[in-house]
Image (cartoon, rainbow, N blue to C red; front, side, top):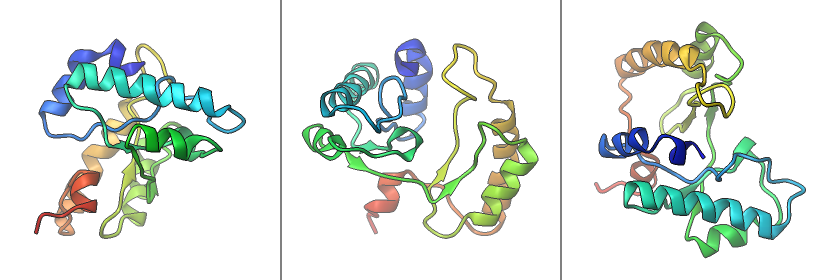
Length: 159
């Protein structure tokens, strides 16, 4: 829904080299849902992302990290690899200081850091705490020798 609502931002994000994955269309919890519901959610997101960016996603992360019966088949049909996080910032509910502390204390080589583009699915989400935390996190991780890569670069290095 956010891609459909903000196509220019989505295109700019992709053009800047960021990888856009499928995270469902409306961000529902997928547990206790039918395989058809799950398939429809993933297919709708896949379609709007491909139509907006010109490229279909190859990665998927379930909303809330919740997987359910029917998800594997829906991913298979859309050729989506399921990926989870290794560091969850809890940025939808913590202050910038606590987000930064949490991420910095848990990040190791190869980490996949999960942060969000707002606190809830809203037209004008509050992303202030996340942005402030990221401004703190990136320089510290860079000073520790970390580089930032897409998930596909981590999974399939070209070297």
